[in-house]
Length: 431
Image 1: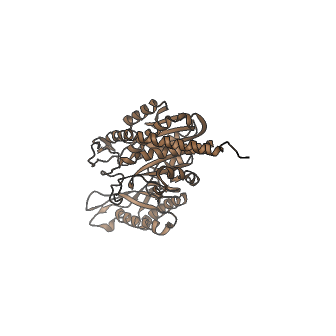
Image 2: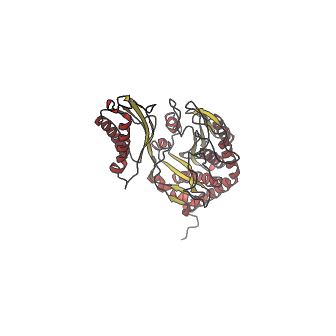
Image 3: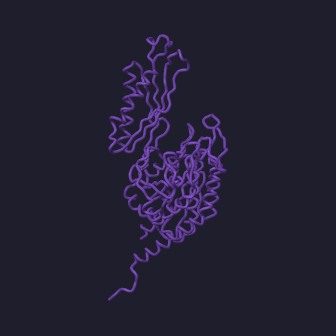
């Protein structure tokens, strides 16, 4: 006897296909609006913990969609909760909101002319890392998914986060602060997804990496103390500048001799050295600031231990002392894509962008505070192409620079990717 009733999996597959088509249609219809949001944010950037205008626009949009909104989270953060028509998991989607203290040099008509004060200095403000596009994309996602509310197997939590780039000394902010204030609770988040635009990946492409995808970071301060003397009589001194030079050179052996580079990369960088104020005075002390980057907890522990050992022992050998503070002002964990979750969701990305346009990427030594969410719940962080087709990635302006540029034609793919990740995860749990 032949069954005349379609198997449940065929019914489910039909529903999933219908959702994909609906997402694609809605995202394409929103293309111009998403670009308009992005341009408005780009023209009016705000630094971390000062995203007042930005957060007001986002909150108003979410409220207009019937989404429950909470404002003032971790200073200026906005959280929206969209409860679906069917029971299921809670999926969090995150976008960052802050700009950078960079003077824009692009010739786009919506270039930023904003000036403000940062660390006591007048600076320009620019969305030089693409956070404007992240916000606009997630606003588009909120509009698409709110229109499919009755079909959702679960709840979506939209996280618009301030201060991903950090805050001024003495302030708190960013993902760490949002987690402390309970953004992953009430309702409790099961999984978190995020994306980052990339100015050196061709538009239309998505890149990903399971496991450690962006480095954990510690900043550091090393203060070398010696004995001051006249520059004409160096034998009367314990020269902290010479000692600092030896420390800097010796620190380079950590990556070249202590890190197993066949497994994971690492970075030890000194980015600032300050000491003295005249050519003929050997100063009493020197301050160095730097950064450490690693991809595993074991490597991070070893980097910290070796920096402290090398700095203090090198100084001691010269009759000086070295005080090492790690972290000095900030620490981000490794941005770690849960391998099982990444494998589960890879087909979603492939059907959205096309299998040939979804590529495994090498580790990135930049850092992301999205990692604080991933410490608490499984998460997946992907990269969306923003470089014009046919451009040379080696010549494309990089992030955090005055010439940073994004091709806006890829925003619809970002909307579709986050929508499909959400729906596919929910449907898999609901199924």
